[in-house]
Amino acid sequence: MKKVAGIFLLAAITACTNNSNKKMAFVPSSSGNLNNVTVVMPQKQWQGNLGDQVRETLEEIYEGLPLDEPQFSIVYMNPRAFTGFARQNRNIVWFTKDSLEGFRMSQNQFARPQIVAKVTGLDSDSQAFYFKENSSLLKQSINENERLEKVRRIKKSLTNEKTLSERFGISLAYPSAYKTVKDTTNFVWIQKEVRKGHLNIIAYTLPENALEGSFRTRILDIRDSIGEKHIPGRLKGTHLITERAFKPYFYNAKIDGKMSYLTKGTWEVANDFMAGPFINYMVNDSIERRWMVIEGFTFAPSASKRDYMFELNTIINTLEKID
Image 1 (tube, helix red, strand yellow):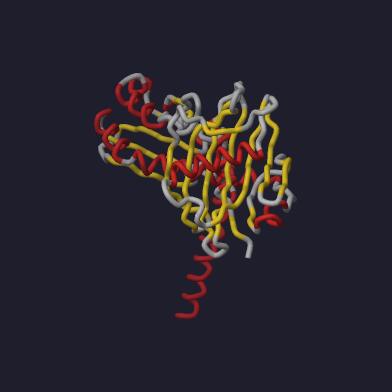
Image 2 (cartoon, one colour):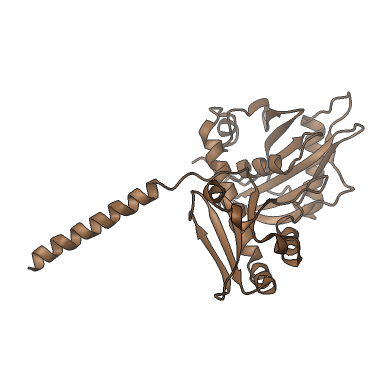
């Protein structure tokens, strides 16, 4: 009997697993532009204090851009319209009236990959409280969800170039649309053309004592010297420098498990009218006794730059040292 019972139990588990796999297979792919968030709530709340708080939180300014752009673009949806394809959006914040108050976040509920944050409460004040209490976690989760989605898209058409690996012994995952435009002894410049502009990645190394003293001043001075040597402007005698009128943002960061300095700011061309945002990582490569510098910058005067900088930041964070 025990053997028979075991066979039936095994069959039941197998059936459940197969059913589960079948259900998983039918989960549709999520949709939506990168850095978009769908907010679902009644229109009265959307036009009131709760809607104001959601907009203030999710549309916080994206750091390091010359002109203000929101961290996320919000797509408002009335609950009556939140059915069918509308539920396949990649990032959803869903407000509902419920006596069971709180904040719950789930993955891949209606599509994959997807984050659904459900905020419940008896009234707007209660829902606003739980949203505010969990807003940092929510934004971090959406950021990571979007980063992974961007990496997935990048890997659909990876470059075959070996410039960075041959020059510095590192790898970056970037699309084949990027091409090496300059390769010297200790400087590589990779560029992708976009409408009326271009996205750029540069890489170079520094000796391990390069940042001694005031590291923030040194980072900016080094950027300017590299620009003067390697990145000319359109006019004779012009070159890329750091825009000092807009104070850059400085952070400690980690890439490939290594301590790094992250700088976000604005570049300009000395004696010319060209400017744009940059993001600079100085990575402490203690094994090679050097600083590995990877920077991304955008020139696109007639376009929004948030998603361009998001792309460059995502690419840079794929940095790996090749053994």
